[in-house]
Structures are given as C-alpha cells and as structure tokens.
Image (cartoon, rainbow, N blue to C red):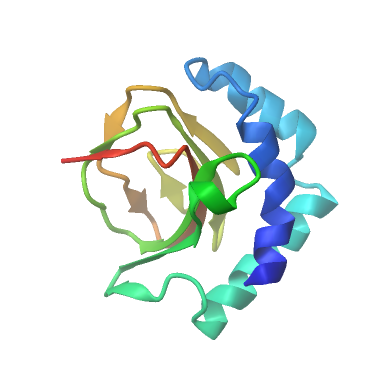
Length: 153
C-alpha cells in the first residue's frame, strides 16, 4: 500500500489548497491538475485495484460495502484523512462533510454511478450531508477529508 500512498501524496497536497465550499470550481481544478484520462490517475487506478484485490485496502466491513483508511491526517502531506471504500449498489452511513470531501471514483463500467453521477472527480462541499450511494454495480472510491473532519449521523 505504500506505493498507493506515494501516488496519492500529490493529490493530498493539492486538495489542501482547494476551496471545497465551491465544489464545481474544485472539481475543475482537480480535473485540470490530475486529468481523469491522464497517466497519474491510470497509475492510481491500477495501484488501488491491485490493493483491493490483495485485500490491503477495503478490508473492513462486509457484503456490498467494505472500507479502510489509507492515511491519517498526521501522516499525510496535505493533512487529509484518505480512505477507500468498495461499494456495490449500496448506500453507506449518513454523514456531514465538515470541511468538504474530495472523491476519486473508479467505477467498474460507465453504467455505475455514485450520487447519481459517473464522474472520476467528485467534490462534496463544506457542510454537505449524505448517505453515500452507488447504483448500477461496483465502484472503488478513494476520498479525502481535510484534517479528517467528518461528523457521523
């Protein structure tokens, strides 16, 4: 998993510079800096899927939703919590994004959605609340919470 953490470090640094209150602008900035079809994201996708298959990420939980922590804020260059979740047409636990959330989504195919969208980058703005939901199949999602800030329930 250390290779995956190293690949995610530049994104963490970048996330720490974004205004996550403006989700649309943050998504544009992420797509510009780390294009969905670019080499960086392809390397991350391969490393994340390899880690998933090896059981080094998403090794907690059961059934249609498994999760894990990749980095704690104190060990991340952008001071983010980086987590991974493997979801297969399921809704997760309701929570609030105290400082926003940045998601890097890897659907198994183009019919799979997260929050009704099939996008590589998705930003959920500061203060937004949801029960994360995938539909249409399996998706692996890596996500950043600045300073690990999340409120459950």
